[in-house]
Image (cartoon, rainbow, N blue to C red; front, side, top):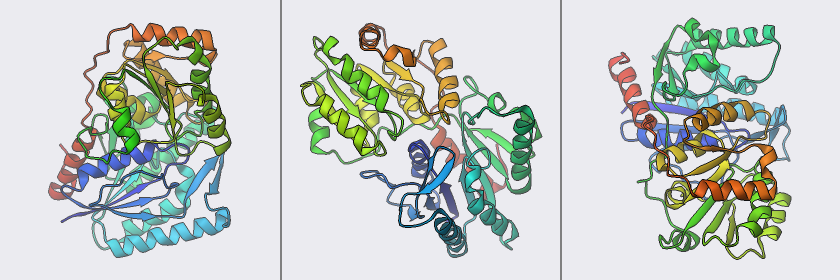
Length: 396
């Protein structure tokens, strides 16, 4: 059986982890897979049991700086440990293929460990195919034009030196690679569109007692979610502030604050929700797709995976692009395009005032459910593309 080493790092939310795990769920049917996970552990998150998972000393991003999750270690100590662990895994696992999630289009802060891995793979006497797993939008940080050009040149250099294939997890009917990477025509390797990677709602995951009660199909629901949660407090606080204007609704409002929301913020939300009978506040559920499938309305930030859940379940939705400056462009561009197609409702920060938000919620509940025909089979198509790469050395 061919072996795939899959590298994933999430620095702010957990979207990269969710998408990578969904891809791996398809890969394990035909490959032996080892996931290198560089992010903070998420309590209750389920990895495919068939995959081997190697957890690096976790890092996260605070502003522009990498920080260790374990505060007893310095970032330099963590970097050295991570680099060595990755190289050790490469030697012991002996992969036929390495998949880097997003790098080199982003995650350049991780090149201290990724470039040594790529160099060692390239120097191997065995043929190791190298693939980039890339979402539909590359983060576009504001920068001077000369800096933007240099960055794109650097990306092209990495791709053309090391990579055999870029798997673009999007649908060209909505977004193309060149929309956020104008130098796409300078890439020497194959660019393959897989369609969007959406969570498989048929995957069996354990129900908690809270899930069993909450997913009672006779109870109308609204679900509010903010991904990992580091930048979601303002949205959930606004929903709770608008609640007195929504009390006549028969809906239970399920709020998921995310595993990475600051404890102080979560406690404030708990206090605000304490006297609201129809509000249930929790940190995390691995069954978010099921909640959205049942809900009459989803209110959320605009991360890739949340948008995929909206597209898959065709739930009515209000989407607030993340207030995090490092995610705002990516989430805003995708959300604006979908809003123009009337697939989602778009929220602006100034619309979080209670009366305005309550009106938006009531109006959205009256709308028809949206329809879309986007390709959401990205995980299965990714597995198919890698089978062709590794077994026939040809990409369809």
